[in-house]
Length: 437
Image (cartoon, rainbow, N blue to C red):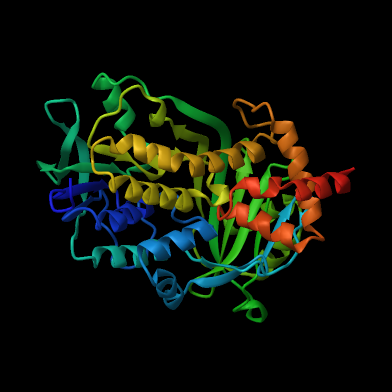
């Protein structure tokens, strides 16, 4: 089936996954129709359909490369709109169980930006594409089916009016609230296996105005919780000359949503530097909280049968612990996999797509289980090699203190730019084990 025969694709959701999906789908379909339940703001604002929108959104190097691929020049537009450029790991102070990581420029530039501005700039670019349309304030209510059990479109409701949109493909980017698993069960395809990890994470975030002597400073800090400590934090400069502070708690330990209590809570972090900085700053926004009870991977790829005409993407497929900043990158990897799979036509599209996105999804899952299972509050299956992962990770981390190449490779792996296997090189393993012993 050539692109002329692929008339229409429907994308459910205008979040970052939906926007990236739309960008790549314009190459393959005459019309890309986005369905969005929110009445979208005309200026950058936190919106109801993105409850995590008030919190830090870490940008990994993979997402930078992929978004530039989908929408050339998008990073320059973000910087022009006010995003702050962060030189990894020169401007960011990454604090883990071994303390602060070395301050070295590893050649990765990423934007630090609020989610509302990121989405606003990206949405403007995508909606400017000639074959993209959007229906706002429109709820997706169900899938239309063809005579063979495949998906042939969507049922929608705008106000009191219900209607249908027929399409050659539907891409479900509706997030954690996706109804696709229930629909598949109802249609006789069976239950979708859920690969889950109960992480019990909570987030509280607010914007601060830095003191005059730190205005314009590009310093950022990601501080992990070191077991048995349950508290972690991310403080970063963002657009508007402000700092965005997100506090992460585990096992019911959640930062308060009022300024004095929020700053006081930071005394419980592994290092006092964030408390010291926030104590000098002025809160300028409301504080918002968000809870992530589980990390989930919906294993559609393991189903015996999967219908033609629908593809899940973003958090409708992989919804991991957002503390590690992988969400946008995993969605971007899935968009790349979809673009590649479409070169083979619509027949057996889903198996090609699931196969193409599996390896990056697996890396993201592995990071979550390796880090989160260190905490007693995390519940889930422990991989057999977990102890060896921790041991080798600690040895590599120690080697990176003095070895700039290993440090660069470690950061590349964190940013999903290199596979974890690059750190399994025999000379690196030998040096790391020697240092550990």
